[in-house]
Image (tube, rainbow, N blue to C red; front, side, top):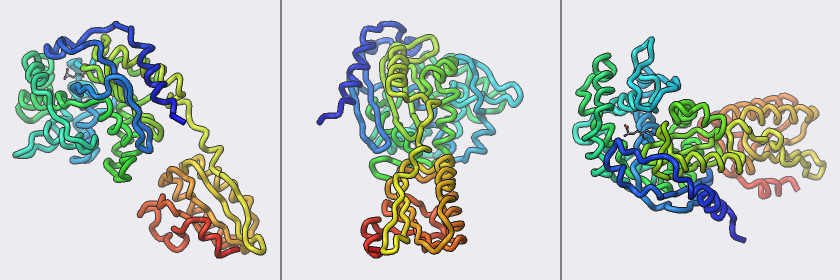
Length: 424
Ligand code: DON
């Protein structure tokens, strides 16, 4: 059988192919000469599968798609506290290039609008031999898994007409948000905007974000979980600028757009999506890109507020083994966050006091959140207090080092079937 997903993506593209609305971002002269008909789409799952359709190998400049990643790099290097002192997290409800500041603190309202992004760029620690834009290029190349490059023509072109960004830079210098030459910072920011990607690159990058910072293919942690949470929160509230409310109610996926026509979206725990179509609307968001996201969200039930019914499925099965049927196995499945853990503890509550061996099998769990681990072991302790012997089977190594702390004696890493042979 062939999965129908690629056909579906092609169908989504053809449904909006004839939409000619919008205009090229001609305030950057080089972008006025791109082919307006290009159209690409890629979708990644949290196990690292990538589907793509249309112009999926065409490179385009990230523009504002670079902003969340500069924010991530600044937080990674400086820590969130220091970054928050210079850039807020409030949606502005204004255009992306608005010359404005947060009233009380005189700092940019958020890192997704240009004033915040120019500031964020300046927060990437300066190095003598590696420019900030180059640091970001390397960081993004690491996430994408290939060497990305700059589009020098687009960079030089934007520099020539960067009057608005320059005025934002000088305003930031005036109020002390920037403490370096604003011209250099703005040039660096424009360079970061000129990093080239394809929708396939973006699908790889967004799969890492959707997977809580862990690369789905390699299993390597690329970004801190808390950092990903911060990033996606800001994308959700500010990523689509003054269309953020419209976007949240219709599409409901944390997202970021760029004036070259790219849009990325990340649905935590589920999918990463990237589209490219150069014509943009009055907010600076790709016209066909927005349509595609609306269709995908609607057809595939991807709206964040749809919620997941995972809490109903935490217990896959309960059965007993052993000659005296005194070994009770609980096979769990799905994700173990607060709601599921609460349900599990409620189920375990019905286990009568006694001297049974209780086995909690984690093999079919896909995610163990910290709160899940804490509540699971709380359950383990209480079952022990009731007189039971309790073992947790973690053959897939789902529990991380911190979650395992002090618990090693109750955790078994053998496969459940093998382990149960002892009781037959
Ligand atoms: O600073 C600018 O105006 C561009 N380099 C980037 C703006 C942008 O992509 C806005 N987003 N949709």
